[in-house]
Length: 221
Picture: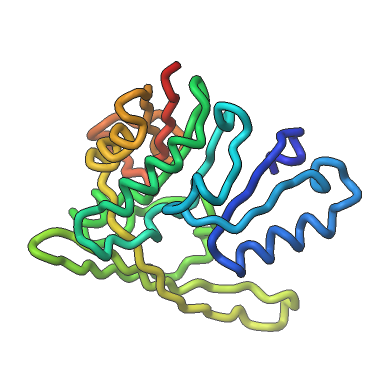
């Protein structure tokens, strides 16, 4: 964890469940100075500047990983919420600081109808038995992607057979080129941008399709 590496962290989430996990972790390690000073706040991307007091000109780094941003739906159909959220997130980054944000490889999913094959960088993908994909189109545009997961959950006891867990998650399908444009608008054009595939150098058209695209945005001074 970044806390264990000596970084000062402010964590934000709009989910009560996720906040409880973070608060529990902080409490269990409260005797360690880094954890005792860990700031955890409830916040919404759409109201971020009102919810969080940024230090001085902003944070050295803002991190939004795990395909989190794709959970923000586009109910209005014009991506105005996504644009506002990215503007708010970019406003938290100090000049010279960086934003690291990612999304699934929705270009591949929309082209092939399935998620890319390969090791998932955020969870134990070797336990995944199946991922079924469906796409909701609105006015000839992809509006939502739903992934139905079937995961094999290992048991503590060897003699017990593994359990199977099934769950569904829905996302807004951010494509690589359009998401870069959203980021550029969020930073008002004042950013240097790099993109990686599963945290490795990404070359457009490469043979291996990454599961995730990771964008690194450095705010220009």
